[in-house]
Image (tube, rainbow, N blue to C red; front, side):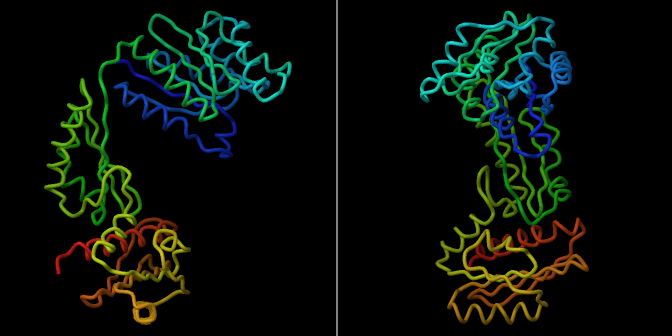
Length: 375
């Protein structure tokens, strides 16, 4: 099974001016093809450094995919960098130039002289037409490697990847396996405790199981590789069943599920109406739930008083409140439901800036568990 590395190119990414979404899209595509992704890196617009990165990747992986640096300006160095990496010159391709001209003419314009750079590729490369943009892609082949250079504009990259590159990879590397991934979302236990409960699964080789800790949420990733999607999904289902048996209610969702959405669905299923109060969270809870009031710093007692008033005024069934105390890294939570009133004090050992999000997620999870309890 071949391995791959992704190299994103662009100084603007290194400077934080734009967010790289191409790597994630390519990684997911490679995963579905059964290709192991070993490494992803970002390089600025420097031909020598890009060439060095490509040569390093060629030593480790069969498939090297670059994105970006295929524009018409002098700071678009990918063509020259790939040529340097494999020790060839660049050459102008008339058929690629015709595609550039045809694309630009659709907008009623004529190409500028500098756009001829977009029809230049490393000598001997396979040209890949770009029907949705002006930057053709190309593939440089060796006996072992395929260096695939795609444009950096996401919609152009995605179109070429799926229409041209995926079929090429399937044929060139005889790809017949698939990799499937399922992510279980948990809350209520820290990463260390989750690890203690399911650590033996993390030693498996296929499927593989890994943990990713977020603020107040721990994700469990189950990935399987098989000859068919059905087989891969069954492998995941077997492990997921065992993990759920060990963790129980700690698992609140899978894949694209979000904690606040799960909570709102449970509240709605109960037929409850909900109001909430936050203090010191900078609007975090208000961005997750409807009907949230943001108040100045509250004590545990004043939070409960405010909740009682808000619930009475709004005639809501449920009122959730959370206030943080940065000085001692703690948070008070309060909850009023048709079953009565509850309060909870939690303390936090992480960085102060993460306290609001941590407190918010724990408050949401508390409401989730209460909403799931039987009457």
